[in-house]
Length: 329
Image (cartoon, rainbow, N blue to C red; front, top):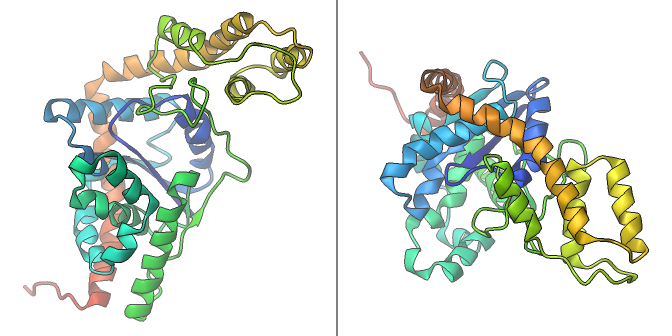
């Protein structure tokens, strides 16, 4: 059975893009694959989150994973920092990483450009920690977006480098996974780019109805004139509508747009209605989960046990190949 791994940083709530881009597919994937899903709290330390908020953010994401349909009985759902083997393997894998190749990664160069006051070593070796997350479970498939494809290529390079250096076949070279088809990339409401917290253009799974309607009402459109080409902001709204609305509703507004008779106010009201139908039941489950701290801790503990069993086996084999010897009794 092939192993699939994916994780989400613990800073920020999950949004509609996360849900349609991955979470719905994870729910299906856990039925047929050996799946590891984790909350990447170690990764989030590069941005220096406030200690007072840190634990709450982890539990929030855990609740959102569960409310979206992940079943802890069918997958390993865990917190990254609960697996000490990850930190140890991260140290070992750093010895195979070269500064030049890390400095050339697109994500590092972007972070340096955007946040020159916070160019820490964790940002530089971010791809090494990502590779560790993947290789420690010897994953075959990793769901990644376009912005993470370079990191996956680095992971494949580290797997080859280790296997060649130590004459072994310990690590498979993981492939990017798109769930058998084109992923739905949910754009933001600001007329450009993808949906995300840092961009301030997202609909979050925890948003209440009033917040959803307020955000959709402010979404960027155009003058509504009949043209051959659809503007990018309007195309984005139709992309979101294609995910949450019925085909009949989508076709009605497409025809209205083509005829130059579209009323964006009506379209936004319909879009808000349909988003609410998707997210408000999830929101209710999230709030319910957050009231049950004992259950969340149980899920976290059981997920850590599953993940540690897999991680410990890989780390032991890795250290043996590298020449480490256990202490003799």
